[in-house]
Length: 113
Length: 113
Image (cartoon, rainbow over all chains, first blue to last red; front, side, top):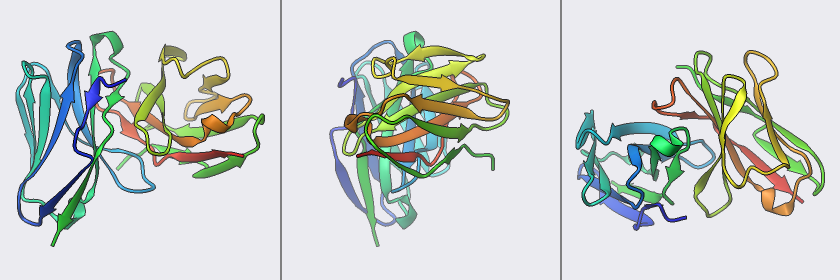
């Protein structure tokens, strides 16, 4: 099941710079997208979401961009901080499965001092 | 801040045994979920629960699995006869509404030997 894909298993960014995490999806019925952050031995922590009627949502250092025509979303973190080092999961849900989140495989972000 | 709590954090069981994983969702949330993550794989949806009944389930959620809300606060996942391939991290989650973000617990690591 490759409905949600995060093609970069890992990303390394200098502290203070921008981190950009990418996610692609194939199911055009998805209309709600979320980003979660996960530390080892913890559950996913909700970061930010966006519905398909928007193309951008911002919350502090985190901004999510949605390009529906390309079926692509991205998470921008600026400025990146050491505490941002974690695995980031993109997830999607849709009208036909509104209660079911489909997750990507995650991208491990490392922020270097 | 309200959170989803799961017990135990780690459960080891023999193949063929029954296990019950427990969760206390956030108190005013109406939708409850179980997800699992097999080591090295994606987080996968198992089941969603609303108004005291299953509202959606995945192909993984076969007759060996059941969920219950035995009282006003707990939400449990039972696996009747565990198999080696049931070894995974099991996450409980809850959300206020069907199209709002789900909040995850810290997970229960189930090891079937």
